[in-house]
Image (cartoon, rainbow, N blue to C red; front, side, top):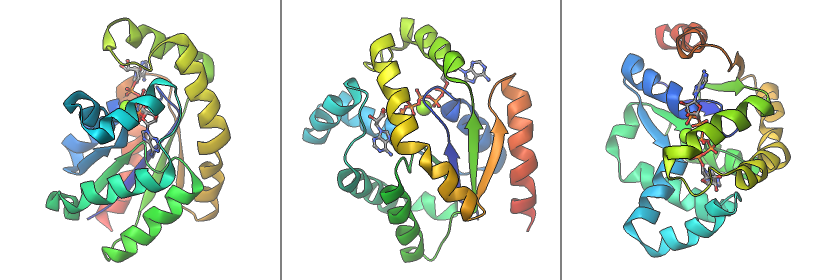
Length: 193
Ligand code: AP5
Ligand code: MG
């Protein structure tokens, strides 16, 4: 059983590569963005709160986000067989909370797969997707905000997970399959251990 964090800026391919990781390793996928968008689509109170932050390109406050994640894990027993965390953690306090949560579940994070892509390419990908995604945050102004928030609040996690020995740097540009092969070359040895 392994737990992976798929880490990277908006548009770096976390969702795209998650699908391939699910197929190959049978892991349970948790995209915190997808969890929040489901609440928005269902019109729940939580969805109304999340919508304000997401449409503005801002992060949901840590404490709320951590509660949502814990609840999601607890209500999905499949998560016990290994998880791909896509889009979580995004701040140092979230990373600390995840570490404690994993300890509570007698588990741990095995690797942080960091997809690295230049901002210009991210902008191009997301503007292109925005044409038909229907996502309230896929417009040039909000994409720019998301990238700023990434650099100020989320990128420090790269150093955090490099220090802890978990970070695996992946070139996130190129073909989807090439990138996946590189990810696999880091994950296979962990699975075989
Ligand atoms: P979230 O849904 O996680 O969005 P994001 O991080 O901005 O990333 P995206 O989902 O847009 O991109 P991705 O990396 O998954 O790339 P994808 O594979 O789709 O979060 C949304 C919001 O929710 C946040 O802004 C925040 O408000 C809130 N939130 C979520 N988690 C939170 C947390 N932990 N704390 C607080 N708030 C939180 O690919 C993007 C595009 O590129 C696609 O069109 C794809 O086809 C294309 N593409 C993929 N790979 C390639 C490639 N190799 N070459 C060319 N194009 C490619
Ligand atoms: Mg995504």
